[in-house]
Image (cartoon, rainbow, N blue to C red):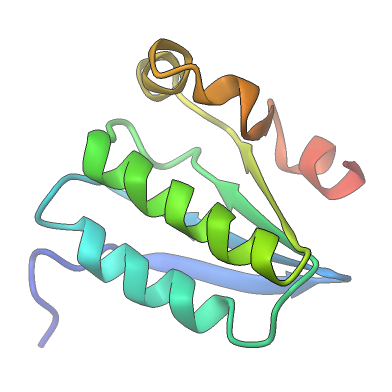
Length: 115
């Protein structure tokens, strides 16, 4: 039985990209679950890791830290991380922390797949 702290994540391969679609709020209790899923997705070192955050209405600093960690891992194997579909509330966290200058952030999954 899944814990309430699990973050449901759909993921699929699209060309040289792995697209992850987490859903629900990502906070301190749920970040470890997301971290585990990301780690599994990075096993084969995809060239691009795309996070479609359309279904994530809220993310705290631990969720942001999880994505920063994923980006650091991707950079070690010369991959990239792209974020798309950010709700205004989530986008503002990246802007306040000035991480919008570090992450490639686009509006839609289609844009992310073309990036």
